[in-house]
Image (cartoon, rainbow, N blue to C red; front, side, top):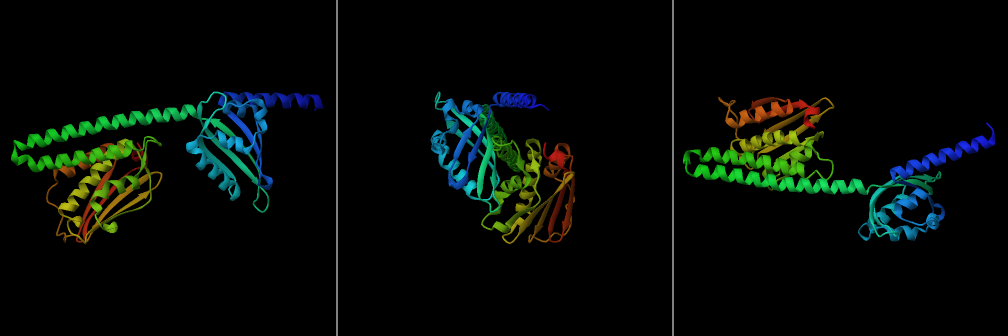
Length: 338
């Protein structure tokens, strides 16, 4: 290929790359790290993202530091210096800048690779700065909506619980039933609150994290009283409701009649998860001796079974061993994440 044609094609590719960077609000950069100095070279697209004039293409390291938002500066600079002085080759961080051109605050996602010599010394950093302000603004708006939704749901649970309690006052025989209903409403409220607290991140929780928080009111002074162990899996907002009902019912019964009704009793919750199937095993030990399985199924057990089957597609198995109840919940992993 003639030299002139090769140069023409190279310039065309460079122009195409620059266009893509402008559209995506992505700026390229290169930093010479040899000798512990930071000699910068910024692309025109980088300058546009950061609101800098053309002469800032070779700005100093101090100029970049000064542009970082004061609330993010220490964290970002420390992360940069630790990464360069370490052995990592990948560098990534999100932070705010204050653009000199208009004083606007913008969110930047910086991603780069660090080239090192045979001894691990940093030679060069090559990367990109991406303007993610729109994404961060959307995240903040979504979190605000989630907080408002959480507040409204909390009010609904409070009103419904109050209605049940007040209604039971005129019917003394219904007091025990009312207490159970209010307890289950409280469990649902906690489940909704736990999951909505995750909306600012990815809208989901993990099964072990959810289980740990659901059983925390029953742990008491002994950390080993209720142990959650095993694999982990994502659990979505819909599935968390059913999981909360199951755990609340098991814990309530354990406090009344089972292992948690005595100080030396304990519960072990084990999670086994694969891409296809996830199981949750609840095993009680150290409680009052179990003579046999209950002769009838209570309202709570019926409610739990219906919720687990409908929302999780789960199967439930209870084994009444002499050492305590063993309960197994098995469900498709895909349904758990819904």
